[in-house]
Image (tube, rainbow, N blue to C red; front, side, top):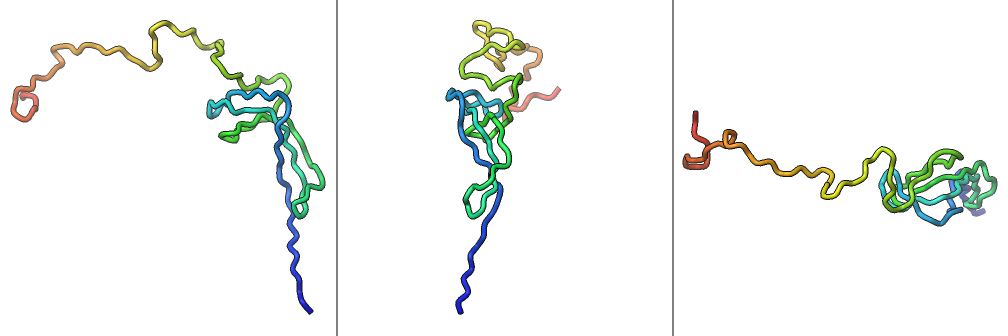
Length: 124
């Protein structure tokens, strides 16, 4: 008599499918235009066959960093791509670059005199 072993595999994976508006949005975590509307469903699977759906929810999901959050009515949505003025930011000023500081001329009193051999300042 031969013994045949048949593995029985079961689990509860979550399946995500895109739905709704096909327009991509900006991810608040990685700042890429890769967020889409999706539906998340958790299934009971037996031998890789989905049998019973447990739960489902509507979410926002990022393709790149896998950020996701539930879509709740009344909460803000991720931003659309492109420059959008936010209420806490002042408008950009001409000639201004964030993080750039114009060079300041050094005062003559703060410059050491390098007249020694080897480039070291003179003592005293």
